[in-house]
Length: 374
Image 1 (cartoon, rainbow, N blue to C red):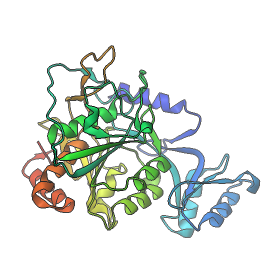
Image 2 (cartoon, one colour):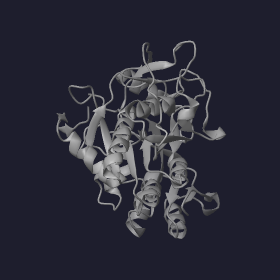
Image 3 (tube, rainbow, N blue to C red):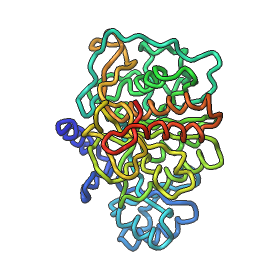
Image 4 (tube, one colour):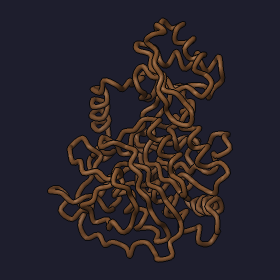
């Protein structure tokens, strides 16, 4: 795990557009020189940036999503600007433009890269009457895979074919395979938001979420820590738009940094006081006996699910002739819960009731003090 974290940190440090704030106990990643600002707060943001020494003519704006702006201020202390604007205009007025990563990130994970797996049999696939709509918002999907293309929907732009040591090849394929191995009641749509390196910006993710349309469950096997542990402002707005007033749920991975307590977003929205909090299910990983030591944890985690040495559909290439792989991470715990919610929906009739039933079932056993599914 330490080798993986060092390698990941080194790769991220080499990206010129990315700022990594290491002043706290966990690294927070956001776009260098860029501030996300809520509608109506551009004048205040410009005043704050001018007060921090940024010349007015150097400040530029671009649209983000939901009326938010991306304000670029070269050389600005984005952390200081965010704090000052929040003090002036409120906690949702602005924030750094956070960057999120898959869980795992790159072809790796807490136990290293995926390993080839043999002797795995596919299930029958979606039932003819499958009605629960699941969106896997993740990496692009790989065509050359044992995952049948008839098992999911994707647009041309949602496919990827990148294979490299530093790429997150097959992450969406693997997650979709976990879902289909545990339920036949779903119709899966794969939406590419993470690039081949397993990264996306807050704007990327917000845009994908508000554009989903008809969906019942959204699986988010990605995330990150935030500045001052505050909810990322644009992501909060996007989840509110997606969830409030709708019978929907989000299953979100708790992350693999081995962090105890610090909120990891979007999973940590599950235990906020926001109106949609109960519609987000935050999922840690267990290995069948205990909470995985690399799994993030904290009071914001709802439950644990299998996440160690999971076998699923991957991609076919020289190192994976069968196309199946064994991989570990909370990335693969979250879709286990998505499948459980879909299964429960057949009896409960609503997604909200299905989430409650899954949480009740999980309470029958614990892993590291957390309710857990087996």
